[in-house]
Image (cartoon, rainbow over all chains, first blue to last red; front, side, top):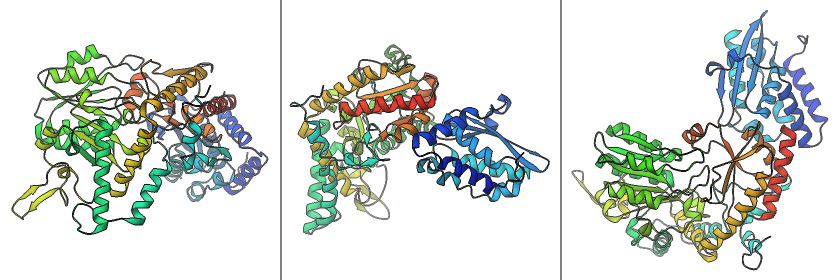
Length: 140
Length: 410
């Protein structure tokens, strides 16, 4: 278990991971791979209730608390967004609610993916982060 | 094979400064022309020249700058009149774009002439801009909105349309060319059939105005709406053509300056056409620069551009069909240079992100036609659309970039 690592540590690890890749192709292939390896979300949670609707793709996030920490599961119909879901889960899973709510989560801007991936509304990343923080606030 | 000699695409490209920029270190390949066309230097210069030399408010000033600005503004109206084959500049209203043109008709005509139980007909191919304004006015006037169905290829069911027409049909608003699929609809026949039932017809020309020769008198439509930015002109300016007697019968859409003849606190009389529908200071600069966009098209010739675009369409269609798992949506004969496609197991958004990283700009998603996507049972498509300045080499780049993206995704 990685319960001693805080959000900043995990972000740092991801930034280091991505820095090993020089080309955009390698970075995206890594992200796509994270998306492909993301544990499937129980279909019971792939409903409107857990859906975060982006302009072009959909994201489902299921959040729960265990032993005072917050956990997430998720999915998306687009594989790159699934990769982003995977990154967010890697960073936020098993953290205290307060840490999640207060995390700036700006690592996305520094891992060298195209800047529009982090900024555009259409892929639902911002909505996803907002939902995960809200869930943490409620559960925590 | 490039049509060198007859069609000098390189000299056309040289007129578009943006085409020489890089995106993510690669040459820009701009294939999102159905969303907006790039602007030739003449259009950009017209904007700069207006603001640098004769910026003034129009129609009422008595100084030289106002005279020059008014003359240029009205020259643009004349150019638009000729562009769509209208018989009078009174029939040309400047708006913000196609969306505002349609809203103007839905509000000014719809609210005055629709009665409870009257019927408005649109089609399954409509852009949201030709759906929502009619839903709003239908709800307010308790009118009924009917939708012409399509087959699985996106072809309108004209037999169904015929059976929908009746004594309560008051208005038909249809898209000339589908923005999502590029299909050309048989608007002449639709207009003819609607007129047999005394229904008025608006043609949404947002996509057709740049590709097809438009003559509103031959078409016989009562209204024709389009946007300047899709015909190589600036954003923020659009056109509503309306038959003069209809525009005269309609109340103004918005109140303010310019649209009035005389204002007293008790009563106001309205200005004559076309000013009755142009309340407030209009978008002078963009209207003036729109003429430069029209001139760009006229200088080459719409038919000549169309031939080039058809060559690109044919080449791209054949190349795309070689990709395993790719299906073209709306793969019909009668279409403009727009190709919408889906690929088995690939989300359009993933494709758009990876293509962008290779300098290729396409459009993905529902293209503001959610009911159409729903009817076709898809979440969206990837759409490549070609303009006067696109080349065979750019389509080759698109195909290479697509193959590379698929290798990464699948």
